[in-house]
Length: 389
Image 1 (tube, rainbow, N blue to C red):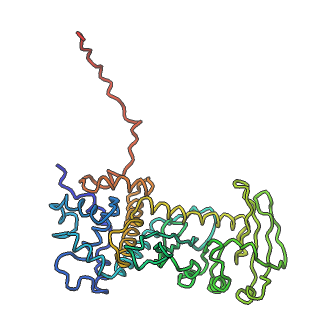
Image 2 (spheres, rainbow, N blue to C red; image 1 turned 90 degrees about the horizontal axis):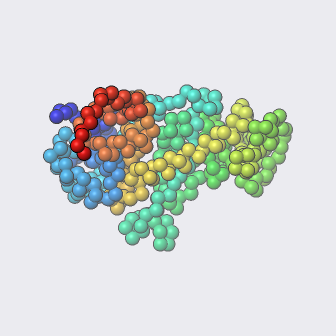
Image 3 (cartoon, one colour; image 1 turned 180 degrees about the horizontal axis):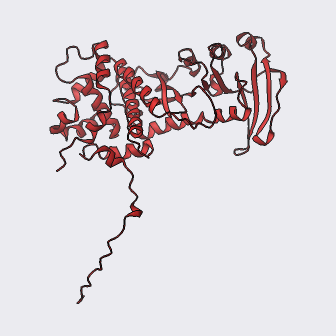
């Protein structure tokens, strides 16, 4: 019998426990706690994410089935529906938010790519949001429309590492463009947004901080060309112009020069008009950067399909936030493990393997390593023929 650790315990060894404890002390998360600590709470939530539990009842049934293993899995001496539900309701979600950002930074460092298609010194971020529908009769605080509730998950997605660098949860009523006010901008980095984020006052703030933006122009944009640059129409670029905004309000909000690029996408037979404050990159490279914005949409789709951020195990805003941040912790943990163990698999494949193997005692590297079954040689021994049949 294998006397090693459970795979789930091997996974949690990659989590920086001391850092988590410092965050808990900062918010007094374990004050008046007897046995079920914030660490136990987070591990239960991560376990639920990795095993794709649909509800609190489903999560508790899966945990209670393995009650003798609680100590070795890190869940503490007892886990009940009451203490987990109460912890999600009462304990500060900032504990899990800050810890998620710690893992995000570690994942971004370990997953950084040097072979990005466009040669850029800074980072490339795609900003977008996704709406998560909620039942208004249960989540009474998430009022969206008259008979519908919901929240928005705003995400700044690092395209070079495939890791979200910034997350913000708001009511579904909040317009996307307001998030531009709270994003921590980095000088020299690119921020790629859809035309729904077009607010020239806010975009000028991005410009004054030494950052670059790429977005689509709205149909009613009034742009006064100052001069044009040479283009190679075989790349799809139809025109590349430098100029200024023409209407009084827009010109007042963004008084500096802008670059307007018209691009024809032959694959989809569609014309695009991009605006940016960057004048160094080729026009075709600007178009490629905007194409990378689609990766944040794929990230949202992946999260909703493979992690639990659509059905929640608690009804309060605090419980919802804790569950979403624990989903991000699980995602970053899998990304870190895949990189540190040099696993040649996608995050989805690693999650699929882990979801049915968390309570095995196989070494983690062994279970995640790909096997080429085609290279196994059959035994060449001659099979005896049994006669008489």
